[in-house]
Amino acid sequence: MKIIYTIQELQTELSSYKQNHQKVGFVPTMGALHEGHASLMKKSVADNDITVASVFVNPTQFNDQNDLLKYPRTLEADCKLLELCGVDLVFAPNVDEMYPEPDKRQFNYAPLDTVMEGKHRPGHFNGVCQIVSRLFDAVNPDRAYFGEKDFQQLAIIREMVRDMNYPIEIVGCPIVREMDGLALSSRNARLSADERENALNISQTLFKSCTFAANHSVAETKEMVIGAIASSPGLEVEYFEIVDGNTLQEVNSWEESTYIVGCITVFCGDVRLIDNIRYK
Ligand code: PAF
Image 1: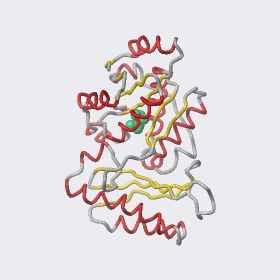
Image 2: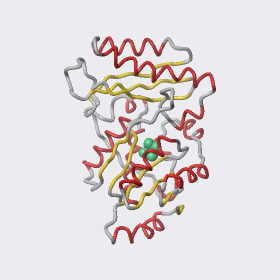
Image 3: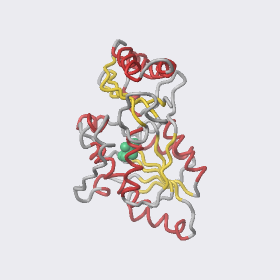
Image 4: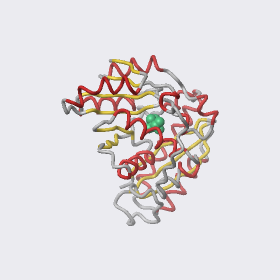
């Protein structure tokens, strides 16, 4: 496995694969890798001739500077995991390499990017589209892999790929959970033992809500989830929305769509956790 720091080096490495029409898989990350990322890497390694993983903490997608400063940076450990997963190239550029000049582009994918995370983290998805499009331009992959835990991000990236006509297949991969149900996240490392215990109520309530939804309305299911999590110790719900899985717009009844997902963001102490569950 090679670690590469510049776009030029990366393109030189990839040129022989491209010339031979070999398939390039790409997994963009911000590092602090865990088994959720490993599942994306393994899928890419199985599907493609070569897999490139990027590790880059993208400053333009953080609307909270404190969050950016606190974001864990663990390149050495990340590379060990990437090597075990069979990744061929790690692209780990610095900020100047990715943004030699400030990126002034504005990506507007309303209404996908104006709800949920888009409403609570203004500018976040603009930053995500800025970096993902730059990475796509640098890697020029055949397939790119994203986790369904960031459900809204995946929908927006699919839209950006359509809008910009990238010839890239976007592959969404299921959420990976701890044995007890907590969705894996780089932010889990910041939870104290007590917070880790409290955080478990998020996934447990979402799982319960699937059975509850079978004989309750959308509004009742929403109320149950928000009530149960808000009354759990140490948790504060930022939002819980039950949406159409394609349009991300709220639904009022279970009959409104054939694809319905509940998306939640919860503060556990000062750690912001997201999760989601598919109802149908
Ligand atoms: O999901 C992430 O880790 C990031 O948003 C991404 C896609 C790597 C862009 O920085």
